[in-house]
Image (tube, rainbow, N blue to C red; front, side, top):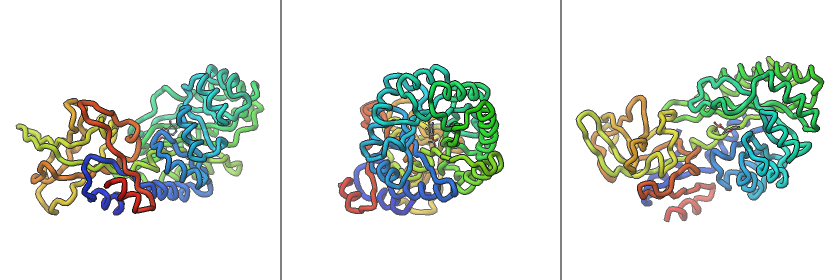
Length: 390
Ligand SMILES: *Cc1c(COP(=O)(O)O)cnc(C)c1O
């Protein structure tokens, strides 16, 4: 799971804590996603998972679309050279000002799920292409999408008819069941539902639909192994074939986490080992706040942890891993406690794996005085990697 490159970088003796992100590892994940989804060729990266300019530039050069959710993300995508006609704006809670800004910057693809948002799009992004966002079952997403986004199928048909009636290009359907989707069959259920909605919309005389964006949620490996690309992709491509037959739409996947989580690690040092009556606490110099590992605080995700340079085969014991702040939430929750060597001592270094998604921008800066982590970006150029660490 952890690449040798990343493991090597964790051994470089620079001061912890720090985070490392390996652009090549993310590119390889992109290749695996593309290959698994063949013959469909469109991967649309959800920028919010990792708005790293070098990565966005590379993906854009490779032909990926970018899923953006704010004016700042639109600007970032354009700044790295992504053409505006490969941006899709998916934040259905956007304000009129945000729509107008995106439209001015050249964005012509917007997701919507309500009559109010349609009215705004009509005013501020006239004639644009729109994708109708459906509410779908959350399956077994570790971070399920709440009821905040997406409309019911019957409402979707009415909205599509209205959108076409006001001169919007109704390009297709979209949804997002939630993040770290561990039950791939949820895509089958959603695709079957979408196919019914698609037909109902056509029956009302709207024939412009061509895009089926099956959302993100492609899982990454954490302490639990992930359902890998071939498995979920087969569910998707098979369901599209079964539900749409020969009139296949352009299928788009919209991963965030799946491309970037495993490309990141966080390198940390043990500050203290505290033995209480019934628990051993290991305090690290990173936690959910300064390292942006908040997804580990709810127990939704459990990051893999390994000790660096510790003699193998030492007896292990269950420990509670906590961060440096005095905040009770600053803990890496684990249903089954982490097992680490009983000889673990202050000064020992650990790698927290799979921290490449939703961390770089969620780090808190200065809580209890702990600054956000420095980030090292590993590119194909090894000289660059060493330079950032010196
Ligand atoms: C965040 C988001 C994604 C990406 O989700 P992951 O779980 O990281 O794959 C895709 N689509 C939409 C609309 C999103 O908001």
